[in-house]
Image: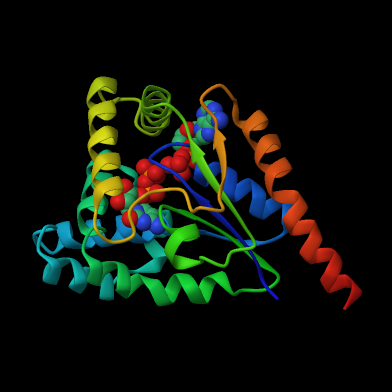
Length: 220
Ligand SMILES: Nc1ncnc2c1ncn2[C@@H]1O[C@H](COP(=O)(O)OP(=O)(O)O)[C@@H](O)[C@H]1O
Ligand SMILES: Nc1ccn([C@@H]2O[C@H](COP(=O)(O)OP(=O)(O)O)[C@@H](O)[C@H]2O)c(=O)n1
């Protein structure tokens, strides 16, 4: 039985950082589901389509190039905004569902981060985390990240905060798979935790469930 750790949360809450570290710790596979939506957003832009048009967004979703998941071009605030617009189309979410669910089953375990992993993609996940932090803290973290990636042209922090708030509001209020904690998710606020402290807290929350499954599969 594959162990699935679902890590959801709003923009720049640190869910990707925690998901990667958890995957490394347990020797599990990691999927950044947000990268899929970012690739769709980028695909629409490159095809000169309209992200608000479901047909344009679905076309891009059917042709995403997974090899570009590490492309820095998808990490910009502008592509984050496009991702949030295309991800509100039900048919786009549907087009990406099979890939995520197939990935989730890779043995011995997977860690997937996103917005709807614990609620829609993997409602039966072994354990679910919902990572959060204040909007100001999240915008500052994203500012540090984008400034480091592009020191010659750092983004405006106030604008980043506004964009993150706009994106979160859209993600939280969309009709399909809105951003919200699953009923059985464990909440982790990282506003006052550095990366090491957040990881220690995340590990303490998920370890009991993971160890439990590992112990019962060892017994056979
Ligand atoms: N607890 C934390 N304290 C300080 N910085 C953090 C923390 N968690 C993540 N970061 C940094 O904040 C930025 C956004 O984190 P990331 O994991 O990409 O967030 P998300 O996946 O939720 O968008 C990254 O530069 C990351 O290194
Ligand atoms: N499982 C997911 C993951 C991302 N998304 C969408 O994709 C956008 C970009 O996601 P992301 O995880 O890369 O964003 P950040 O948290 O890294 O800023 C989000 O704002 C959501 O609109 C989603 O709808 N469902």
